Length: 118
Image 1 (spheres, rainbow, N blue to C red):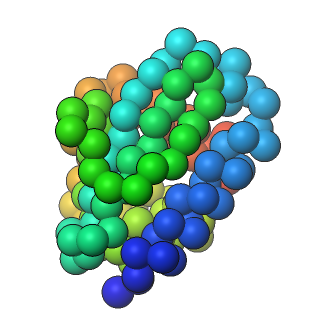
Image 2 (cartoon, rainbow, N blue to C red):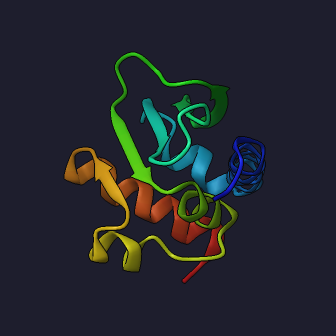
């Protein structure tokens, strides 16, 4: 099991890599979303990613009304946000649950592809 600190480090790395890809700022300039990162095995390790005006911000804790929720074990979420694994296989196996519209899920998929490639 990953710790809350390890998951936070992975999310910080994701934010850094997102900001290093200028095409994402343009692509997401009018896509404002609140994403809840919800580890199933770490009650104190919930985080919020806010996408606003093309930028992304990390906050501690769970948001009140998220647009999207990602649920998985802390290890899986940490590996995902460090880019060590692709979200496709865990999603297809049911190990990663994404509660969001299909459009938002596809946008998140594109973001991960632009950051880490295939």
